[in-house]
Length: 176
Image (cartoon, rainbow, N blue to C red; front, side, top):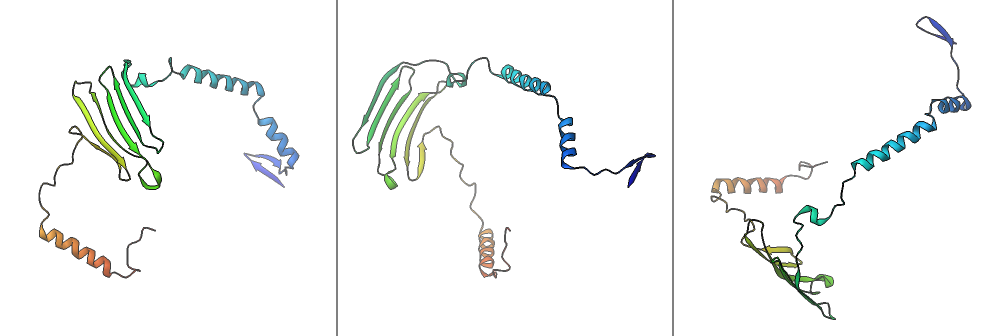
């Protein structure tokens, strides 16, 4: 059955697997082009690499501090004490024991340092089943609610909760 496109008539041809495979092979790029693309991609990656390796020093201060004290005492029952002091004023004191749920380590301590603006920073902390709980005068505190909630608002909240409890399961809101 011939087909006509723009006035040119060609017979409709059925492709066999062999014909399709040969067409596919002839449409693929030569191997030399593929090697060029791979080499160009590797060169682009090499040029994009940083001039120096990343390190913690590149993130903040590159100042090195002398360790003045480093005492670590680990007991046979899992309790430990850690004391560290450096020449630039950083201080860490930490104590821990495996008294948490399922033998988890519960720890508490304090660390201090001088902020870049010269402010002395001291943070006391506890880490236990309740999570990490820092305490410092420098940590932000949420402001108190500026005013008490009016009675009519509390009444409306209670009414909405009562309506939700009395609603049949079919009428309840779903997220499906």
